Every structure is written in C-alpha cells, then in structure tokens.
Image 1 (cartoon, rainbow, N blue to C red):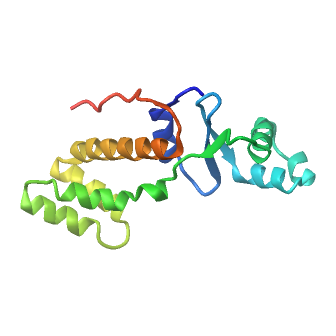
Image 2 (image 1 turned 90 degrees about the vertical axis):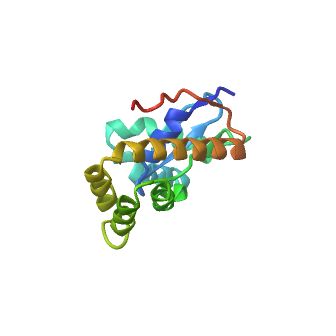
Image 3 (image 1 turned 135 degrees about the vertical axis):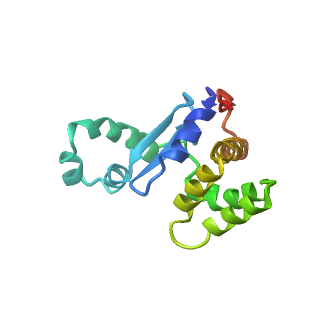
Length: 164
C-alpha cells in the first residue's frame, strides 16, 4: 500500500460535487475522481449509457469496474466537503478573532443566505482573510488525517504551510 498525499485528499474536498465521487486507491495511494453517471452505468450494466460516453470519459469505465468489482477493499470513498462542516469551522475561527468588533461583524456575516460569500468578503475587508485561510488549512489537514487514520489509509504529509 502506497501512502496517499494529504494534498490530494484536500484537493478532493475542494473539488467535491454531487456529479462525481472521489475514491482513494489503496493499492497505489492515488485519489481518483469518478463521474457518478459512469459508476451507475457500470453498476447497472447499462451498455446504452456506456456506449454513448465521450472519449474522455472512457478511461473512467475501467476505474468504475474496478470499484464496483473490488474485493479486499482496494478503493475507499474519499471524505466529502459535506462531512467537513465548513460553517462550523468559520464559527470556530470567529472565536479566535481578538478584536471584539471584528468578531461580531464576522458573526453577523455567517447568518442567513450567502453566508460563505459574506464571511469571506467581511474577512477580507477586516484584513483577516489570510488568517481564515490558514485556520481552514489547519482544520482541513486535521480532518483528512483523522479520516485516513479511521479508514486505515496510510498518508504522506506533503502539505506546505500557507505563506504569511
């Protein structure tokens, strides 16, 4: 089993969507992204869908077959952004902001519609956006390390700290 790079797990979180799923290949440590339509077509043996795939999607069929037919747990679903709970991390970050007025502005920013955008805009205006990104980077690293430990996935810490 080769170790999976933490940067690949974090990239999988950042590029998470409902249209595809990221998987960790325990055999080679790689994180692969698989279109959910391709995986379902392989699971359902839907040759009509598979025959209409674009050329760039065809390599995914082999990966989907390996995932569907896997024995011995070669592939494991990578963590999803939904499980990271970024909103909760924003609230934790706000508690670290020493300036009471700035913290209150950030607290108001995460209320209601567009909370993520409002939070980032407010953090930028207050000059703490870089602090937020460092905080988020650390939280994501802890999250993917805990996930890898829980799933028995060896990992390589290849993350570089964000520059000040």
